Image 1 (cartoon, one colour):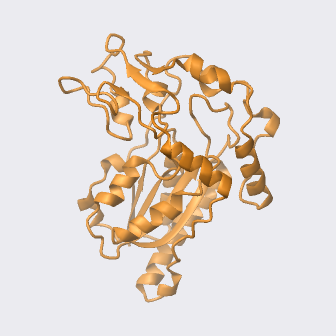
Image 2: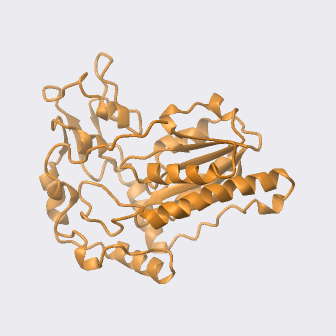
Image 3: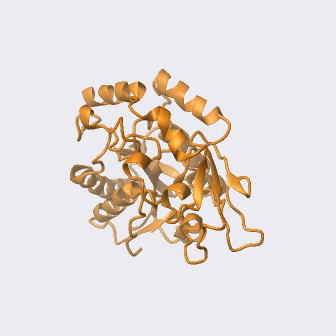
Length: 318
């Protein structure tokens, strides 16, 4: 059996999980490849028997994952499994992603999620889920990878009762209201993102182009294209990654990051805390840092004021 594991990862959480899934899959499959979604074409899928697809949770799925299944040619029953990493509210991910994968012609044979650290300009540093994914998470991911290969093989051999039903949308009411309100909000809650060409060192640096999930940035064309508006970005996906990774400060938020984080200093996320408390009681969440160590007084960009605010980790050869 040949397996292709496709992932999107910003800060590195999902990439770690994807490679651990790949390690487990190699124990039961003849060939396993792990690739970033940017390096995958639909033609490549034809060479594999089983696909894994994973990403972080962005309220539900990120735009590039949505494009993947919306534009996919009919997969005619090819087996796929889904995985994700997340902070506090993962509830919409699988109820959105799995039915859409089925609609694209995939046979969905399983899914699994893991907690991961959250890196956003105004979120606490350290965050409630800091430390994830840890060694235990990666071991679970490895076991999941082997399990998916073995399940796929058994289904191919006739055990179709192993195909799980589509998930019910049983998201907590308070979570659902919060997520829907965020999705309906006009503009980026983190502020409009603006680029200063005078401070930009393109073509020496292409980080914003390479890492834009929405493919909004093309500095190679004339006039240069930046963001959802062409000259700025005000997309409501709440992404500010280009701002976070810009090494020169050429990309800024309006209002400024200082204004953005000012009302967040010292403020506890009571909804998040109640959700994680319940998840911990249910054995779904392992708290790696005590609540008193969560950075309520240090939003991420206050804790990491130097440019870039986040250093993109080196990517493994794939």
